[in-house]
Length: 104
Image 1 (tube, rainbow, N blue to C red):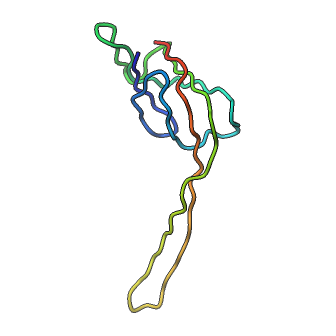
Image 2: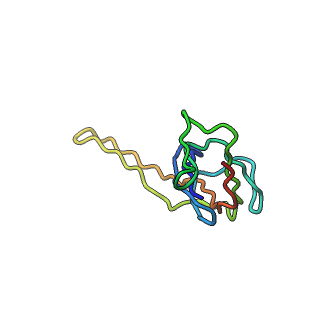
Image 3: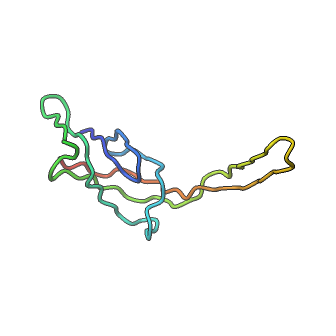
């Protein structure tokens, strides 16, 4: 079964067993289970349903495999002929999740 979910401000098309990298879930650790209730569409073939905007009673269960940090990016700003420069770094907090079950 396939589903389209919305989690952490992003949309993903998933099926059971998929591994995703999403923004970190707050107050969770590796091994915890997360239930995602914002399911936009689910099913296959004739049983395919689309929500308005979400399906009632549908949910996706995911297991957190790992919490990690993304690669460092550098934000550099400069204004020419003004002597102004600013350099800042950023690393995004991420969670690696595995989709365990889809209930539609």
